[in-house]
Image 1 (cartoon, rainbow, N blue to C red):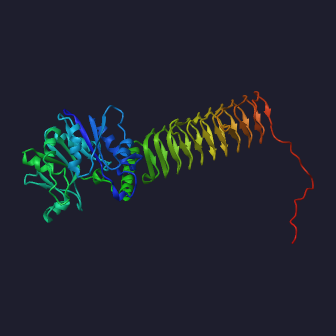
Image 2: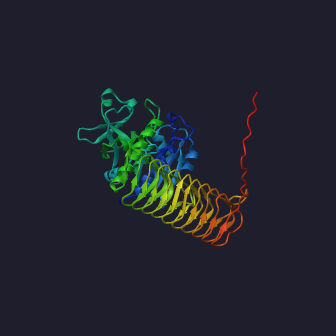
Image 3: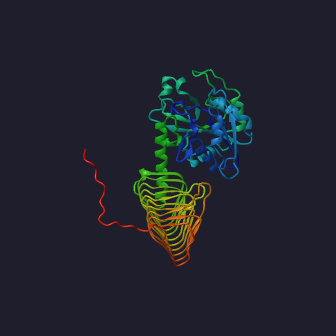
Length: 465
């Protein structure tokens, strides 16, 4: 674009109908705050700056939002008291440079597509007012677009101020406009509150523009989801489904096979290679990468993880890398009902079976822990077999310690490895052992009480009353 764009985001409202202590614009959709969606969209337009107008819960809103990477400026101004949309933009005017175009967006309208806003900015062209409009079968509650005989926009009339004839108009104003900033500032100064609500309407700038001879154009769309706002938990849930369907459609266009697009939740960024299959009711959070040929079973929750080619994540597996991340090597088999926690690093063809938990541990190629086990703060070598019911006792009540299991070790069932401890390569630990000292390579270590058998023993019998 030949002109800079500054985005104003309206985020001062209380959101009473949400029935929540959380400010409305911080309610989450697809894992991000509603207003964060709007800010991220502005970044995709290469906006010079974003000015967020806060009011209700201002400190919490300002702390809950962030500028995307790329150097775009994020600024805040406060509206107190809240006296209408025009009054809100008046608070932003002093920080808007005169040389650009102001794009006005709403913090509770998260799903406007960047290409739609780009078309609106192109229509504005830095010299005219451009409005985003929508035809609605039931326009109740929305400002109506009043056009002249030649089709140009003459005014926006709010529903409460509209005549019966005007209420019959089905083209509504979305709340989104693009206007040269130098002109907008002059019109903002002329606003008054002589209307049914006693508020300063931003929409009144349209009649000022018309009166001053400026062309007012409208970019009309048919996709209501792009201009849908959130005013209640029901509307939030409806938009969540619409958002997730968008995500699912993009994934399927890339070749991902989804068992049911309606039963997918992506609450971050999901990147998939070829021939990826995802079963129903899976949740992906944070940054997740699925390489070629990965299969994800039903009802898995996966966050902040890299899963390499050919790995199979069986149903009901929970993988959460948090800040440390989780990596699953190529050809590995995980689950069902497995849990990989932050810092789990699995090599090629590792098997982690049902009810096995791995935390801050590295497992080399071919290592297996197939049943009911815990590996925490451990370094596990190639081809290790880790028995059912075995655990690393890695915490002494004050500090964490590491367990090292070298290549080709076989750990029997129901063993406790008390860290710090090292099991030498090729060794074996007998089932039921508690190992507190290092074991040499190739050895058999057994640490348990001697079995005692009493023949012909009878259990005590209950006394008769």
